[in-house]
Image (tube, rainbow, N blue to C red; front, side):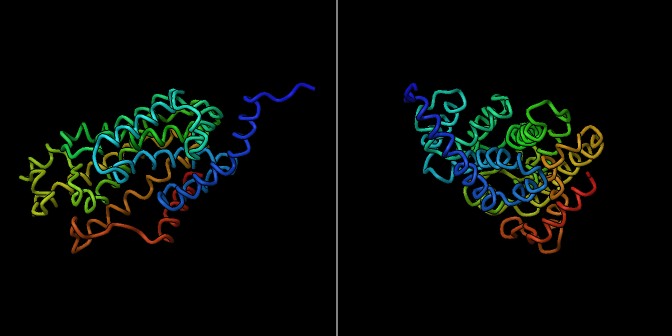
Length: 297
């Protein structure tokens, strides 16, 4: 009987570690991205681990700025993930549970690499305090970071096939990303980050420096109001394309159901973009997603 090679032993070790890697991803998504965690529960049980791996990867990339004190170390971290996707990260990959689960998910569901590397490239913007130049740039950023997740999750839910619905995925992701960026406004402003596009700010008489110094006044409120309407326009286009979304991939689109409730919270009296925390109770989010899933079903 031939002896096992070192490669065989490494493969066996990798396979034995995968359940723990996927469990780590599930825990991370539950704690850090609870909206998407809830939506994963509407996917078939066999596909949930792959969704958790995808969303955990997204969270790892999104939090790079918070883990570094200056942009250069952040660029190095992002480069490690690029190398991972291009097969150049070396043996330490299996020591990183999110990396191990992601690579296994890519292989199982034949996920395209380009949207994943595109997500990494878009997140380089987060490392710096540069202003978002225009609405077009913001929508492009949202497409690369959020719409790409909807599309990749759809491929997982379609068992590695092209499920269609690419245009709908674009609108769903941008709407959800815009709502998320507006919800994160207090933290971003405190950190010197401004995602509100410069062209919208200019129309409302506001500059980036006004925002980071907390003195934007009514112009900030008008700019956020304008961005809410843009988010709603993406929701409307998503609604118009609902028939193009196969029912099997609907869990990938469920986060978009939370956009309108979040936007309405911003329109309550006393809303202060610098201090008001926009959230929903867990039971409300669960109910909104359940209702959207029921309508889709």
